[in-house]
Image (cartoon, rainbow, N blue to C red; front, side, top):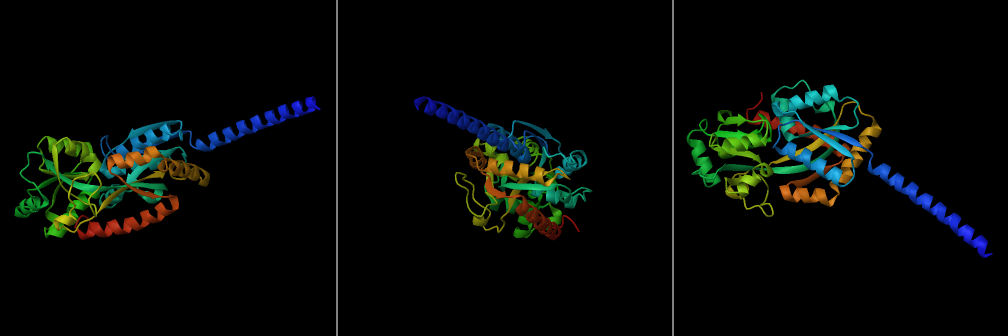
Length: 328
């Protein structure tokens, strides 16, 4: 009797062990729905899209959600050059994504781009970042009131360093001009393909004022090299000692959202694998920590929600660009 029990126990143990191995393999397979990932950042290094792509690489690999990730930069024309490359070279590739956002929506419209976001596959909206106005630390401009006063004296003389033409930074300046009674068509806006270039222009004393996402100016603001005059959030951000435009009596509020798209022509299964992988990423403690570190708002939308949002956003941005005179 004892022998029978012993054999039965050993058999049960082997079955249980086999089941555990099978379960582990199943979990591992699910966790690596996308083994290798290529992330195209359609901007030069140093800007918000680049920071987003690198943050995704860090979290996805660190959490074991993707085995290997390659991040490439292809900047220019508000991301539309990178978008064109992605549309033309990544068709059907379920292991490729491109970082995008509000900047690209505006650039597609203002540049009359032959490629647009209807040609790629919405995967997820990820973050929102508020716009900050900053000047060199030695600037005589101490507040938004000082800036507006100087700007009104000669609108064309005040040169603004920002991101791509028609992007969030440009839209922000246009909205500010409209809010304070300046003709938006007289804005002297100097576009750059990445946040790093705009920072260099300010630090070098080449341009007097800059506009960008807070994270792109954050290091220089905290180091005392740039002075932040105002931010586009509805209320002050936790840990960020920068007054909002609204509290300085300028009724402008805008957030620069960022997200990712998959390649054209991918299958429903490939889309689901990418979407599920990103869904797991945004729930990790590491991703939440990156949001906090960069003062990014959690703007996560799933694939279907994101697709609807992008359609609505295209209509909204077109109206804004027409309103401030950037497109006819």
